[in-house]
Length: 189
Image 1: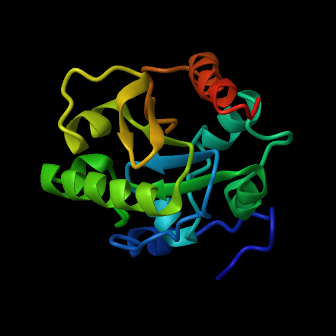
Image 2: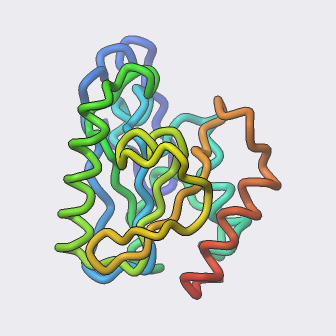
């Protein structure tokens, strides 16, 4: 079942449980300013087939408050990001209840696939959302938040905290500040 633009569709518990292994299509185009890269879709996102769809996820609020968007979008408006030169993909395509279900090999394979995607699509920035996932996927145990020394293709790499509501290490003002640094570097804010 699809949602109309901007109008959320809430999956049932059964639909959420059945979404294990589902995929969510990339929101992507050539030459983006920023390609955000999540770890992998959660079950809620897998059920709706929209990125960062769980109601407690702060991604959409952070994007707006950090200056990436002029209005607050919802997961069901995600295609509207392309007009703003923003896209979304994931390191691992399959939906799981938690990212802890992913094994290190999946993350490393995802990093290689992301590098190929960046080389092909040529975004100015690739922003990986999740410091631990970045450290494991790219085998950079000492990596810190912010811009990284490495590049993916010609894209500058930026690491940001995961905006999931489950990530209690970062409160909304911290996320807005950190995402805002990227928005300014990408000349989107």
